[in-house]
Amino acid sequence: MKNSSQSVIKNYRSIPRLAFEHQRLTSFAGLVLFWQLFKNLQLLPRLEACFEHVRRSSIFTYGRIALLLIIHVLAGYRRLRDIRFYKHDPLIKRVLGLNMLPDISTISRILATADERCVQNIRRLCVN
Image (cartoon, rainbow, N blue to C red; front, side):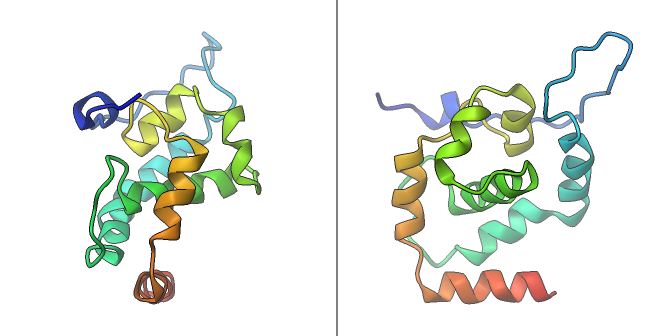
């Protein structure tokens, strides 16, 4: 099923408050700390800049896919198929600024179109 960018992308401006007394936390509540770090570092725009020379044909941008992979590793997962364990987690979707996460095949297809220049740009970003 095709989705429109308005139904997929959602810009969240505020970081949710952690309320321990209500126990309404997801398993990934610790990402709130990383979310603030990502915002302070302006990580998403910097990741998007690494891929700006590549033609964008998907609702899910290269920068958001790269950020998803960073969160994937931070959450302790290694295999791409493990996204199924948190595909519906509201906090992960909120950190990524999405209403829904991409399918594994979409992620693979987008990553397959990245070129050597993308890799060099990401390496340069990691060093700085």
